[in-house]
Length: 204
Image 1 (cartoon, rainbow, N blue to C red):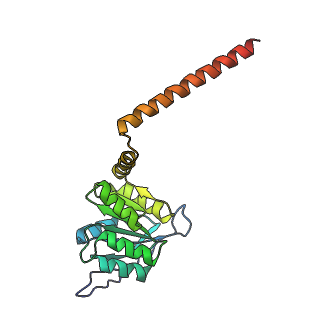
Image 2: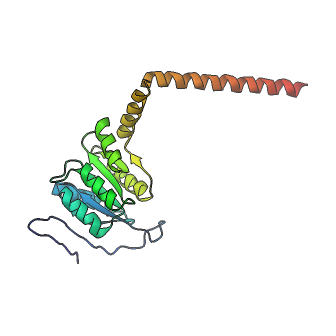
Image 3: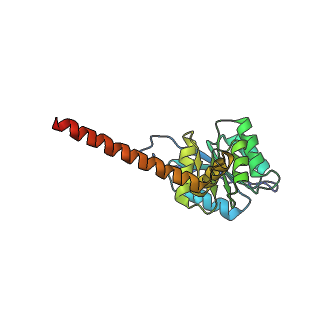
């Protein structure tokens, strides 16, 4: 029996599923809230996450106000929200959720990986950021990392953040690469020198 709750003004859906003891993860189950304006996306994310015994989707909502209200009601460890939510966008919803319960880990999903948008999400309190091009395996990994109190950035997102930091200190990626190569050559030369010194000492 799967309880379902809905009203004319709300598309919050709740599902309680009996689950077997998670293998290798004790009794810990991560409660997840999904916020996305597209029903097919909400259903897809729910289906993906609930294939894993250590995750349970406690609610799925379609706008920012509902996301904040559901986070207060169901106290999820992780909230997955898109940027383009109705009534209250994902970044403002993130800020409100984290303000109310700072330990909540928010993962923001977006079609965009612009440095400015990523920065705004992180400043609002998001602990994870993925583009919608990420695969399901990466999302599951992100949920587990964020639930454990860590941060998670998708690869393309991490590259954007890195490039932004480099620009701030006046370095380019090519310059940094050349600098790393110089450092590596220096380490190799030092190692060779030390090895030669050891061989000479052994002959004495």
